[in-house]
Amino acid sequence: MEERKKFSEIKWFKKNLISLASVSFFLFGIFFVPARVDAATMSLSPRTGSYKVGQTFSVGVYVGSSEAAMNAVSGVISFPSDLLQVISVSKSGSILNLWVQEPSFSNGSVNFEGIVYNPGFTGASGKIVSVTFKAKAEGTAVVSFSSGSVLANDGQGTNILAGFGRANFTIGGAPVEPKPPVT
Image 1 (cartoon, rainbow, N blue to C red):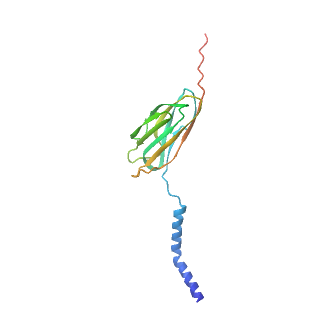
Image 2 (image 1 turned 180 degrees about the vertical axis):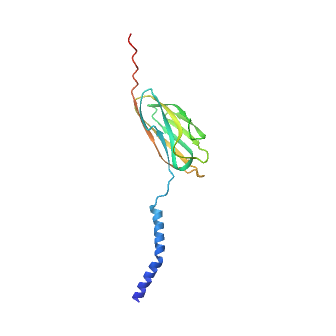
Image 3 (image 1 turned 30 degrees about the vertical axis):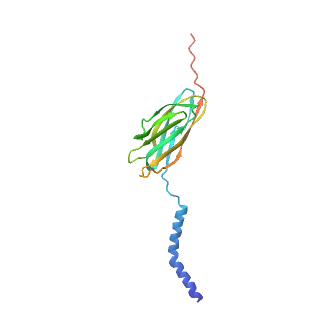
């Protein structure tokens, strides 16, 4: 009787081994395999620089969406208004075809919101706008995104934004004026 019971257990084990293995792989897949994320980023370029008080310089605002096509982007860029002043915001060379909100700037921020026509944009670095700053005072100016979104061209408007870049600019003293020649 003991032998028959042992044989029955072995037979059951062999019969159900494939089912047990399938369930194990399924559970492993659910709990331990990360889901695929179609991530996008927004960045600033250049990320660093040194300028003198009174000097102007441009910073490009870019979106990167290499894994999934994106068709809409919006953002707010913040900067210290005591150190920097926005002179202009240019749409020249932008990947955006339609502006939901024209690029604008005010005391310490730059805003933009636009759309890329179908099939959307896929790539490492698509230009959104260029911001021209004027250095106002000495210090370290951090320019960063305070909010934003990048929407996938998936028919559902899925926000695929994974992260923001930032830029640090050193503002030094005013340039030395050349001395007039002595006659």
